[in-house]
Length: 281
Ligand code: FPP
Image (cartoon, rainbow, N blue to C red; front, side, top):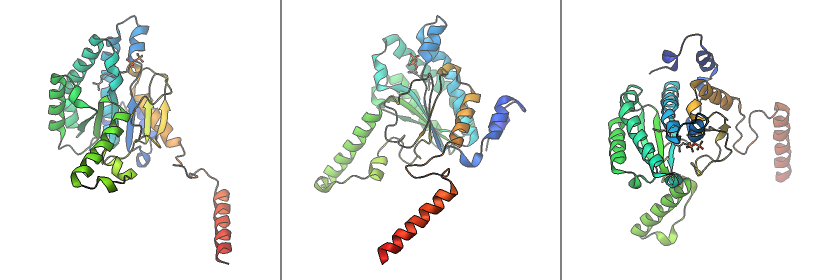
């Protein structure tokens, strides 16, 4: 398996950060809202599309870094259903960039054993982009390393609606619609992320405190990392910092978590015992 250290400068900042990461407590799934391309370009007096073009390098870095760290899945928000509202020229550039990325990256995806997937309403994609996307997915289908999910023409609400409708359609066909009862597992199994762990870490660049219709179901317990850095400026060091920050978090999933003092835990246990004994009296 490839290691991140193979591509880092020994003794450099990224090396030191990578060394601080506990490999046994990596997020299994990292999701990223790549935001701020337009502002990055605007601050330089450049057209917005220059920001998108500059956003490709951080995509390459994030994919390589996560794959080499041994992260199971990386999901990138590349195009939302709302992005169609942008000027035609900008939307066309985004499709062109996707095709350039796919064409250029396949050798790297193969070398790093990365399996590409796409999630979203893909039927609406321009034919050329769809063709290249399907080809890249087929080429990498046998890879067994990291799953790279590109969210394209994606909407979290649409994903949930599609999942429920597909369950209803199946039940109707099976004649079991009257008794159809959904549970969390059944619904999860119809999402684009079926078979993958939910994201543990959601990174958003450019400082906006929103989830923007991204993975609404799957991020229920994700740790959020929001940075003011604009996506084209997002470097490896900051990705490693985000993972380190994730490792410092006390994940409670609604429970008490590991930072609850031992004394409190002991007294809680004692309380529960006393109650249980009382109940049996
Ligand atoms: C948000 O920035 C970014 C996007 C809508 C597109 C993301 C695309 C890339 C990073 C480039 C290519 C990606 C792949 C996977 C090939 P924004 O334009 O909304 O920024 P703003 O909020 O500053 O206007």
